[in-house]
Image 1: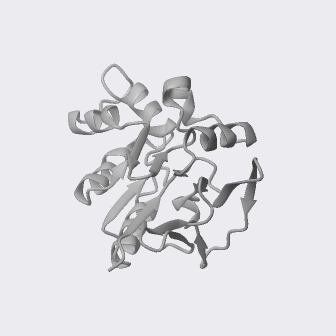
Image 2: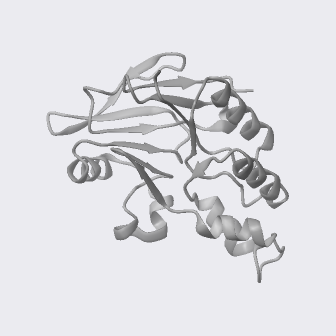
Length: 207
């Protein structure tokens, strides 16, 4: 039986979208769920607690997005609104990068040692893509932040975009190293990674 990993990103405090994404990926048989950051939205602090409840209740593995950082700084102890201790600790403990096997999960860029917190907001350009390919020659990077689903691979020493259509599989086996941008839950997009066949399936219309 294939191991399926569900991946989502950028729900931005939309509790309905987050619940819908978790429900769909679970229904599809995903044994592990990842959220690539911006679970919360710093302009919607009232949604932080219920969104984090969903994450904890379903055991979703997450990385820290810039909105999680902003919420923790502005609305935890000393801020204008006090979060529960459980939520504050959840946000504080989120890593910038997670790894599983040869996969790397992050919000935008995986270079936490070099860039620190700015890795959450720096954009993925050709230079950044090539830096990942050089340091992770056999890996997949799963990222969020840009809201636009896509795949970038190394070809002839250049970063090349691979056409992506929601509702279709993209084979990754012969495309490593590569960078996969998930798309945003607030736009109804998430994805499934079939680790046995090494391909990803982009889903839209999540509701």
